[in-house]
Length: 185
Length: 177
Image (tube, rainbow over the protein chains, first blue to last red):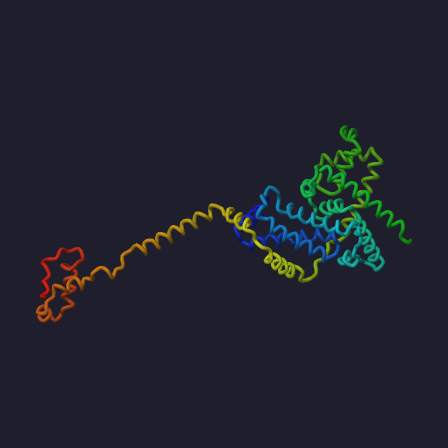
């Protein structure tokens, strides 16, 4: 385990609450960004990030340190996101305003509109993937986690992660092709 | 080059994922490149994958509203503060206390016990007769009359004959009934 994490974990187990605060500060961005990619709505993603840290606080005294703390936190967050999706039950929706909130300023209004529309289509397609595929794509492409870590988080083999990734990317490709073919020229 | 010719499409496509999204050792990259050079289907697959991944990466990282983290921390602290700490957790934390902390704690506790014990067992000083009290029985009225600088004499007595461990030179006079 990461030395800094190990020291903070030790301190927390001795009863130093400030060590937990340090861990939250270290990982809050990672947890929130993953949740936001999975959930899209800022409020829901923030609630999931909160819940992830509450659960971590509850379970940390039993954390044996055999896996990386980051991987363990991801696993909690992934499970919360999958539960959220389960509750939503294939209710695919994307807050397009939020997805495109950070669109950089492009050269011309036409180009900007095109870029925005592409981002919307991609975000919508990712949100339409089955939650486990969405989680794997997000972990690999956006969180830049190695396949081994993703396999540990998702509790499957590395081969399964790669096969799922492949299926997900093909599916995304098809969805985007359909989206673009339906667009008015 | 020979291995490239024998690598199966499935293998090459799995390796493609590493090539397109990750760190690939040069030998794996060479094998994939060699396979793509001879397999049109995989070449098309690679082009599609590359484009899809490019589009996915085009979506920017979600923005965090201003002041969000401060609110987040406050809300989290409040929520965690409401969580009851079970006896099991307290016990686990106590058991998790590392020996390097227990050593100084035990030493401090031992010092406190020793100090407290010695304070309780020590005889109060007021019970011991003071040098003045020891000398007093030997001083008669006539002595006091003839020795106006009595305190000096008493000090002299204390420093020599009147020390605590000194044997009395003579018996004190008996009180008249």
